[in-house]
Length: 282
Ligand SMILES: Nc1ncnc2c1ncn2[C@@H]1O[C@H](COP(=O)(O)OP(=O)(O)OP(=O)(O)O)[C@@H](O)[C@H]1O
Ligand SMILES: CC(C)(CO)[C@@H](O)C(=O)[O-]
Ligand code: BAL
Image 1 (spheres, protein in one colour):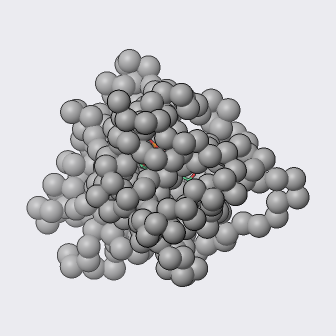
Image 2: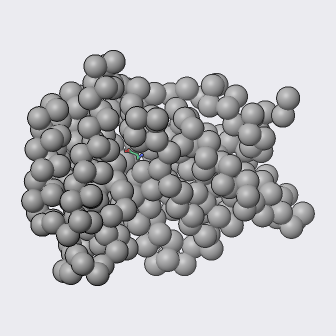
């Protein structure tokens, strides 16, 4: 039975552990999460293990990336079972601060963004990426990992984090990992736990509609017609669509020449009270 990870609650405590590893010349990997861990997170941990001698998994439901109307209160918090799963993978450290450690009274600094943060998620969650970028920069500065792992499931987030790390010259390599899916195509997500059994069945429409739209585009059909068909399939299944778009895979800008640019299809849609996101290469 592997040892349980050490749980650090403060930045100072985490820094002391990382300093000791550094003195031994060890490479450090970080996997930032909001907890409620699933197999997608486990793949990020396995990928970190290939690149680092010591792994820090952060578990923090970050209040600054939720609007007051969003699900901060309802977000699943399952620390004990998360830590047990991480023990199975031999993770050395969990950083699980409370909100006061990250944002003490008088806290006044946020990261502001442009570039890949413009549009898409920002059109519907205007506060979201400044909250993500602020907390990710604080986590990276707390642990100064050599590598940090992020999932392509949150594709725009991955682009925003890459841009921020490049712009701030943070000494961490950002690795993006492919989306882990259920057998029926639904991307694993902690928020899938909100779905009723009926909604869970309907939820497969999001990856299916995207795959079908992608096929039409690859076959040389009209991009707008393919996307309109995808949106219609989602609406018909009972989704309320925030967006289903095709963008440049590297910049997330609108496509000037879809035939030659790298392409990514991205979607966000509500099923009842649950907002699902997904994306695929096209
Ligand atoms: N299915 C997945 N495949 C690969 N990586 C994933 C998957 N789901 C989440 N991740 C990645 O895990 C990291 C932590 O994500 P987070 O804790 O928010 O989980 P989540 O399942 O995305 O939750 P949420 O339901 O809030 O979107 C992020 O880098 C995210 O992209
Ligand atoms: C990167 C992250 C841990 C920041 O809170 C979060 O946005 C997530 O889990 O994707
Ligand atoms: N997985 C991204 C975190 C969020 O949607 O709040």
